[in-house]
Length: 101
Image (cartoon, rainbow, N blue to C red; front, side, top):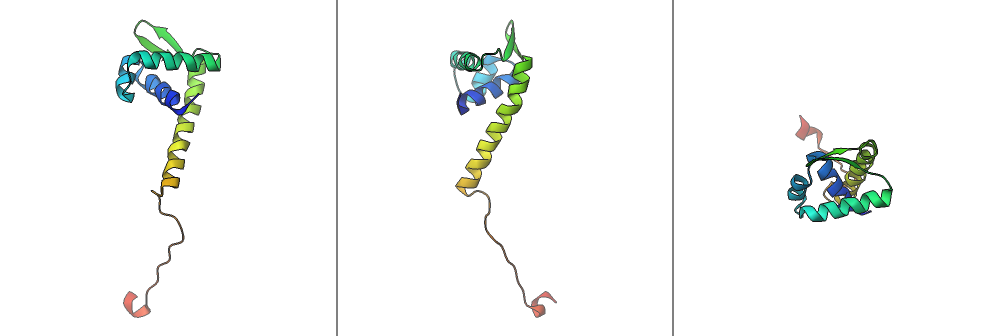
């Protein structure tokens, strides 16, 4: 399991369609299908209920979606903190009494 698979899983869960999700994550549909099957095999469960051209999350898929979203959110947060996008350190502000009056 890798972050790309989690991103693909989230995209399909949101879109309900391999084709729409593939466009969103800039991949070909066959790649998404393969990667999702690999993820399902690794987890040992069906994450989706396949109906014609639509996909619905299975009960296991609903449970996994929560974790997948949390994992990706934590990765984004970690990247942001490490990259220094967020201000860090102590901030002190002072002024003279005459300036404040």
